[in-house]
Structure formats: C-alpha cells, structure tokens
Amino acid sequence: MAALKITIYCFFFLQVLLCLLSSCALTNAQGLKVGFYNKACPKAELVVKKSIFDMVKKDPSLGPPLLRLFFHDCFVRGCEGSVLLELKNKKAEKNAPPNLSLEGFDFIDNIKAALEKECPGIVSCSDVLALVARDVVVALNGPSWEVETGRRDGRVTNINEATSNMPSPFSNITTLITQFQSKGLNKKDLVVLSGAHTVGDAHCPIVRNRLYNFTGKGDSDPSLDKEYAARLRRKCKPTDTTTDLEMDPGSFTTFDKSYFKLVSKQRGLFQSDAALLNNQETKSYVLMQTKRYGSTFFKDFGVSMVKLGRIGVLTGRVGEVRKNCRMVNKY
Ligand code: HEM
Ligand SMILES: *[C@@H]1O[C@H](CO)[C@@H](O)[C@H](O)[C@H]1NC(C)=O
Ligand SMILES: *[C@@H]1O[C@H](CO)[C@@H](O)[C@H](O)[C@H]1NC(C)=O
Ligand SMILES: *[C@@H]1O[C@H](CO)[C@@H](O)[C@H](O)[C@H]1NC(C)=O
Image 1: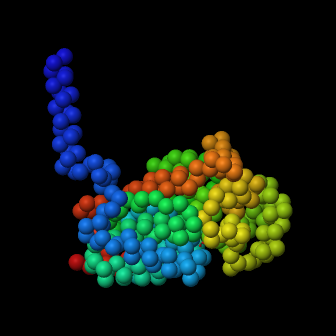
Image 2: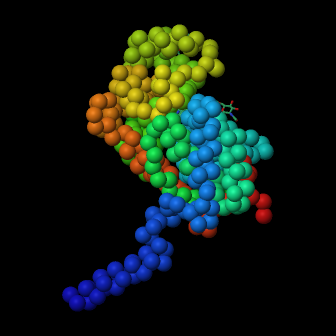
Image 3: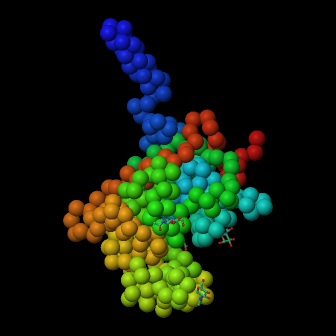
C-alpha cells in the first residue's frame, strides 16, 4: 500500500516537473498559446487586425474568402499554411478542385509583408491565417475569441490531399460527420462551423444539380424549399458557371445567426448545409439557434474555431517560419 502511494506521489511529482519544464499551464498540449508573439512581436496581432478592418471597410465581400482559407488550410495537413504554397508545376493544394474560388492570397501576402517589416522572420503564415479568420469575423460584426498562436509553417503541399480531405458540398451528413471526426471535430463543431456560411457567396455550378437534375429525371432536390429553388433557377441557368450566389441573401457580409434560420427553412444553399437536418444532434442545434433568445452560436463559434485551429499544427522546432507565404524557405 505504502509503496503504491509513493509511486503515485512520484508520478504526480514528475508530472508537475514536466509541466513546469514545458510551461504547460500556459500552453495547450500542442504548444500553442494565446499571445505567443507578445514578446517577440508585440504588434503582430494589431498589424493583422488593422489590415483586415481597413480591407473590410473598403469591401466587405473580401472578408469571407479569407475565413474560408483558414478552414481549407486546417483540413489539409493541418493548420500549417500549406494552402498558401505554390509549386512550379501547379500541383499544389490551392490548385485542387475544391479550391474553386479561394481568393485572397494577395491579401495574405500584403499582411505578411507588413509583418516582415515589423519583425522579420517571426510570425508564421499559418498564424496569419488564424488571426485573419478571427479578425474577419469580428469586422463583419460577428463574435471575437482569443486566437492561439505559435504555429509553424509546413514545407509540403499536395493536390491529392486537398481533393480527398476537403468536405464536399454534395456530401451527406454521415460523410460530413466522419470527415470532421477524422480531424478531431465532433458533430457540434460541424454544425457550429457550418454557420460560417452566414457570410460569403458560392458559384452556380455547386447548386446546379439541386436545381435541375437531382436524380437524373430533370427534377430538383426535394430537400430544397420549392420557392427558393425557383428563385435560384432564375439566377442560375443550367450552363452558368460564373454567377455568384449570396449564401445568406441580404446579409452575406454580416456574420449573424441567420444561416440557421435558412437551413431550418430548407433554404441552405448546399446539400451539405441541408444535411444538417438529417442528424438528431445537428438538427436540434440548428433549431435551437433560430429561437429569438438563448442562441449560443456566437460563443460556440469561437470555441470551435479554436479547435479547428489546433488540427495538425507544427510547433516548437518543427517546420519553419516562412518568409514568403507562397514558398518554402531556401537554406
Ligand atoms: C461543412 C463542410 C463545408 C463544406 C462542404 C463547404 C463548402 C463550401 C463551398 C462549396 C463554398 C462555395 C465555394 C464557391 O463556389 O466559391 C463555400 C464557401 C464558404 N465557406 Fe464553406 N464549406 C464547409 C465548411 C466551412 C467552414 C468550417 C468554414 C469556416 C469556418 C467555411 C467558410 C466558408 C466561407 C466564409 C465561404 C464563402 C467564401 C466566399 O465568399 O468566397 N466553410 N464553402
Ligand atoms: C481550381 O480548380 C479548378 C477545377 O475545379 C481548376 O480549373 C482551377 O484551375 C483551380 N484553380 C487554381 C488557382 O489552380
Ligand atoms: C452517404 O454518402 C456516402 C458516400 O457517397 C455513401 O457511401 C453513403 O451510403 C451515404 N449515406 C447515406 C445514409 O445516404
Ligand atoms: C439529367 O441526368 C440524366 C442522367 O444523369 C442525363 O441522362 C440527362 O441528360 C440529364 N439532363 C440534363 C438536362 O442535363
């Protein structure tokens, strides 16, 4: 008995020691922490915030693609900036079909240049994406949260990984749940993060099958509100590949909870949005957020974004801090 006690004490002591050595009180298991740049680059977060607020003031529609960029980065190889890399032969992640309209690369370059001027070689491109995602949401009148930083940038990008890891707008709920689970995100994270579709737009081809030929009989998707489908058909002719559709019509540059109202009324734009009604847990979350009082979406969004930001991160001495977000460093 005594021996066991001593063993337990020793074990406890060792844990405390390890904790102190790795300052585990301040960092999470993966070595990220809020305010990672406070000492080395105290103005880092300010530089990002200012650029985003200036940009959104000029043109709010530039914000949503930058929020989407972070999601894509994190789902392929983890949040390590690989979505920004370019390869000479064009076989990078950003060239894979789910890229569709990943915009905003120039904007990330500008912010990175400003940061390099402020403190060269300190702030990683992957952290820029994480900070940008938060600041875009705030600038579009959404919630704020504390962003963990300390990510380092990867040196690999691969077109096939983007194709196989990115959730598809045509997926059913089972597939979506599995894909999120494989990244350590649960059903609640899935439905909460889908709420990002309260901002931004999408292109006609993504909804074409829901409007014109859902089962190959010239029909439309029965899970899409009839009146809404008719409205979408007026905007998107069968061969239209360029028209933008606001995902949350009327408030596509305001981060609010109206996405859930749309989904509950069968007006979610993608099959993946509509699918949230096909699981008990995700459905009850959607319905909960449509109530006038007691919506938890804003608080939940920050929590799930922090989880998203932890996927497959590189910290410590792994990876590098890229100088140019489009290229790995040369040694
Ligand atoms: C649940 C799985 C998801 C699927 C299948 C999905 C799919 C898509 C698709 C197909 C588009 C439209 C692309 C286009 O036509 O230009 C889009 C747009 C967007 N997505 Fe998602 N998405 C998902 C989750 C997320 C998450 C988790 C976030 C962020 C946290 C996000 C943020 C956005 C934003 C902000 C846009 C608008 C981009 C713009 O205005 O250009 N999405 N998404
Ligand atoms: C994105 O994917 C499409 C295929 O859907 C491709 O035609 C396009 O070139 C890709 N975009 C970039 C920047 O590579
Ligand atoms: C969901 O989609 C996957 C992949 O396309 C398919 O294998 C599966 O049968 C679908 N599940 C349901 C319940 O429709
Ligand atoms: C609808 O889909 C069916 C089966 O995939 C195809 O044979 C038919 O040509 C399509 N019709 C149109 C108008 O695209």
